[in-house]
Amino acid sequence: MKIGIFALAGVPFHANSLLERALGGTETGVIKLAESLYKLGHQVVVLTNHPNPPPSEPLYLKHSAIPHLGELDVLIAVRNWLTAITYPKAKIKCLWTGDNHDQPVSFGIGDNRVIAGIDQLLVVSNWHKQTFCDNSGFPESKTFVLKNGIDPSRFEIDSKKHPKRLIYSSAPFRGLKLMPEIFEKILSKHPDAEFKVFSGETLYPLDSFSIKEYQLCKERLSKLKNCIVSEPITQVELAKEMKAASILAYPNTFEETSCITAIEAMAAGCVPITSSLGALPETIADAGCLIADKPGTVEFIENFVEKICYLFENKNELDKLAIAAMKRSKELTWEKSAVNLTQKLEELLAEKLGK
Image 1 (cartoon, rainbow, N blue to C red):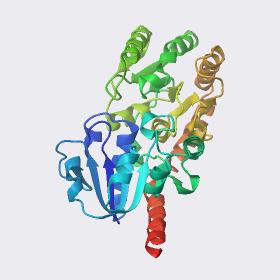
Image 2 (image 1 turned 120 degrees about the vertical axis):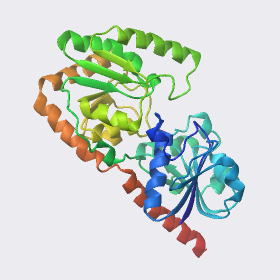
Image 3 (image 1 turned 45 degrees about the vertical axis):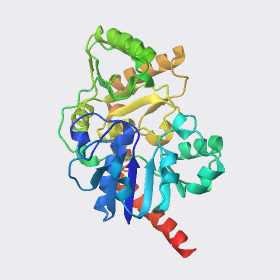
């Protein structure tokens, strides 16, 4: 199939950007899915807002090349439904989004004219599908779960595992503000505990309030023993850090529609401890620890600390979860997602051509 992936919103990127700098989940997903579809034999072209993408396989082009693409078998518009319904030369038009119904980019998708212009909505979890369709009005019958994944080869590296090292590598606004209190309590019971943070203002644009909140959080964390706060790092570097950590400390306050960070941690044998918001229970399954209390409450923080300390003190339990995490991650790869998507697209094309 000739597949065009239009990723025209967000930060500029190209095929090799993951080797150069940290990227968000959407950009990472586009790069890895395009690569996996290409390896399956599809003719794949990715359109981004990068001014001059270097030569690559699959091919990346700047957005001004759109008029010259010709007819596509499949158009996959990333995040922006307007792109999907306005490009005229595609047999099948899909919108792929990790955003939920309440994000501004999703507004209007329940309009009957938009529904008619999109052949398939690609969402990232069953929770996402249910929540998005229930609240937006977009029909479940035109919605397909395309699960997020990881590239397992990035985690095929040797690294010494530090039994009491925690790691956080998500955006600051997803719960990092809770970690100074959490880690301080952990240190009071385990003075040899370590915490490495890879987060900051560079990965996602933050408003002035969020920037100030992050700076205060960073200042508090930096004063704590054995805590190192760094900017986001490349995927290769992050894989090494996750392999060296034992626990992903993610007191998430945000309704995740999937969570690539958690999948990456599981692939590294780094056990995720997080909230039960959104699709996190679906993503992690029995390969981590979910705190049911409302994030930020006294009960949540106490249970979060208690769970980490319990695993520090019970290595066998930590090891069991690490094994379960690595096993779980093997179910969530971009290769498998590309195969599943190919099957769905072939069905859609057959239905359309048969009409």
